[in-house]
Length: 225
Image (cartoon, rainbow, N blue to C red; front, side, top):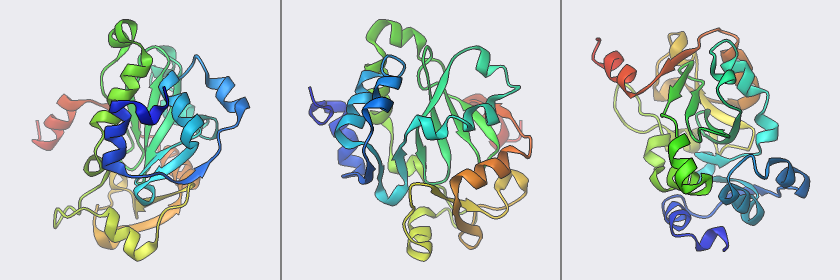
């Protein structure tokens, strides 16, 4: 079955539209990650390549290009000892979505926050239903609004404003705030800028913050507990 014939991925495409900036996934890359990443993701690469949606708000990426970002953020956290992780997608604000070979979409790296978000392990689900069903669930629940960031003063989404002012994102670009929020910057329209993702990643990762967060931690942080 082609990935576009899958109902879960079809729902993803209804929300995100047709892909842009597609780059062909070579057979070498496909074979390297076969049996390490879900078949459904490999099928997506085969049909669409590595591509962007909504002017770069969401990208399905080549994990080979992003492999150095994982130890940069996860070294010293203990997470590298529990699973083997690969970056399979990212947002226009640099949020990295990781796939663990055993635990699935367990962690995101939120580089503008200097933190690692714990979604909870998918290991039990994967063992029962398979990795393809697990990653298709990720695509099903993903929403454009969940990838956007709001101005802290107006509560208005920033991404479209940034596109209008700075232009659509290339494959190696992201929007950031200067300075980044975890360095004291503010998420505002006036602070947004477009930068090279890999340079920005290296700069922010070098600042040393490695806070692992989950839903409970975020709630406590939001309400000052």
